[in-house]
Image (cartoon, rainbow, N blue to C red; front, side, top):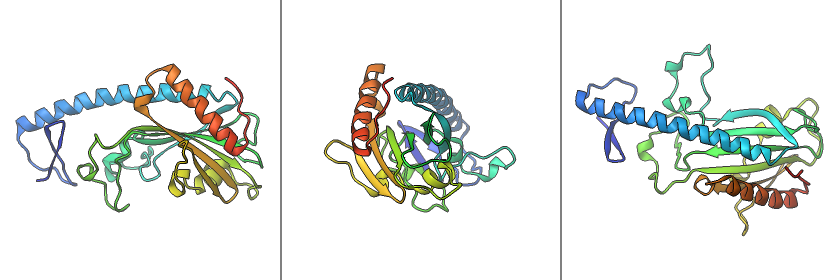
Length: 237
C-alpha cells in the first residue's frame, strides 16, 4: 500500500481500488479531509473575490468565458464522473477567466481587439509526466517549494483572424501562454508574438495580495507594463 504524508498525517493513496485500511487511521484521515474541504471553500471564495476586484480595474471589459486546466476538464452532467480523475473535481486548482472589451469585436475579434486572461495557479508544483496517467501528488515538489500565483495576461490581435473564428475556440484557444515560450524580463514581464497575436503576462504570488491596496498596486503595474508593450491605453477604473 502506498502512502503519502501531508502535514505529518498519514494519507492513503488508493490507485483505482478500495484498499482495506485501519478504521482509526481512516477516521483520522477523514477528519483531515473535512478540514481541507472547509479551508478549500474559504480559499476559493477569496480567489473569486480577488478575480472580481481585479476585473474592476479593467472597467472596459466584461466576462466572456472561463476554463479550468486543459488537462482537467470538469465532467459535464451527462458523463459518468466515476470515469474521471480526482483532479477533475478541483476546477480552481488551475483556472483561466477570460474578459473581453465591451465595445470590441465581442467573441469574434478584429485587428486591435484584445482579450484579458486572469489565471489562478493554486499550485505551481503541479507535474504531469504523462497525460495518460493520473498525476500522483506525492511525486510533486514539496508544497513549501511551490507557490500559488495570479497571472494577468493580455492577448492582442495584430492581424485579421480568418473569417468566423472566435476568441475562445480558435484564437485564444489555439495559442500558448507567454510563459510557455518566453522568459520574464528585468521587470517580470513575459512577452510573446505568435501567429496573429501579441501577448504579455505578469505574475504575482497570491501571498503578496494581502489587501485591496496590494491588488490595486499589482493591477496598476500590470496595466502600465503590458499597456506599454502592447500599445494599449487602458481605461482608468
